[in-house]
Length: 177
Ligand code: AMP
Picture: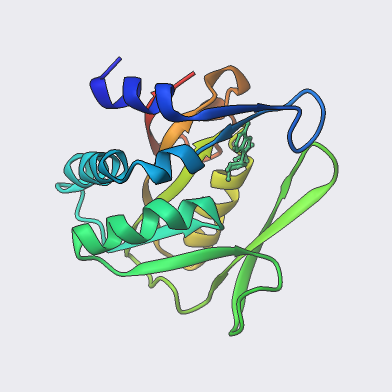
């Protein structure tokens, strides 16, 4: 384990039975309070992706924003939000994905990314992969390429990587459980 992954694992808080019984929620709010650690996370993402010719960073509501926007500033590339259905005001594209019970829908503005652009997706955590799959679908619907997806943590026992439809999509996680 890298020093930064070790630090994240010691800082992140496990909350049992949230939001429903049986789930161990990985609470990143203690990480956010350690601003030196946040800075190292952003620096690590920036150095990992500096050679990827990224045109835009797309982050997923809402915890993805906490890492996506500072990374966009650090890398000097535009930021676009991916939000839950009904939150974005202008014309959108949408993608549905399965949750434990029922369906969820996420949206992105139609003018968020352009044909041929290379987009890096950021979220706090990779679980089953449903969310990042839907995010990649939105980007691809608009003719852009999902160059990679990066997470602070990954719950590998939920097999998120194998559930991703785009088999060329590179997945990067700092800390894997
Ligand atoms: P998934 O679509 O299953 O990969 O779930 C990923 C999304 O759900 C991310 O936006 C996470 O913030 C959130 N999430 C799922 N499971 C957890 C968990 N155990 N702890 C914290 N966040 C989670």
